[in-house]
Length: 331
Image (cartoon, rainbow, N blue to C red; front, side, top):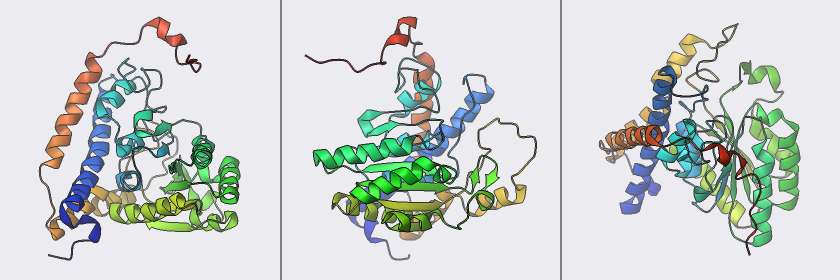
């Protein structure tokens, strides 16, 4: 048996290891369920899957607290799941039901759950970056001690709003963690064809913040990198740019038909067989004597219950279309 990492020593450490595995399984099994629902005609639209990228989102989110802010992107299910959102309410949202986290109005690409600090996600590339920056500014003004964790992809790193936000955060030393899930593709465009530098993290130097590259398939490595960035942000030392090298195992959007194939089948096969983040973590847990064989079964039951909850939830009534448009005044 190899030496157990410090993070996983003792009852709290074992609980952390188990929660890492549980949340990665939650992302994977939830999204595999969406594939089945898509083929059954129960989902109203295509879905953008995080399968293959579970370690990046879970490792990052577990380094924050429930009170910390988080913004995601169009690849949206993994982020709130990793932040601790309820699976039943998320599934109901995908099916457009009133019991969903946004009352059935957001759908797959526009999930938000304030109860876990998830401020929202959007199909507009890069649009959540200024939202997270603003949340960090609010936390700084309020002196709340909160941080904002901002997820985006390598494609969004080429949007002007990323550079504007990073410049502001660096100048004002805002408590923001810019987290790039670099899967090497912006839809079908390879990063090498769209970006002049080999690592997105290099750009951090231009905005006065640390830039860190981490193996996005290693949940513990991601957790450690994000934990360091969170501690730095809480101490008032400003933002960090983390780049997690990862890979998506499916098309940009499940069911999307592309005229010219761009994925290498052998490459996808290699990542699935040798770089699956869940399989890698399971192997290490076994080495450390921390394997918990009950986790997958428990999450499977939770996902099945979420599907039933979503199916049995009513659709929102027509009059609800005009609610949630404006902030309600409180006397």
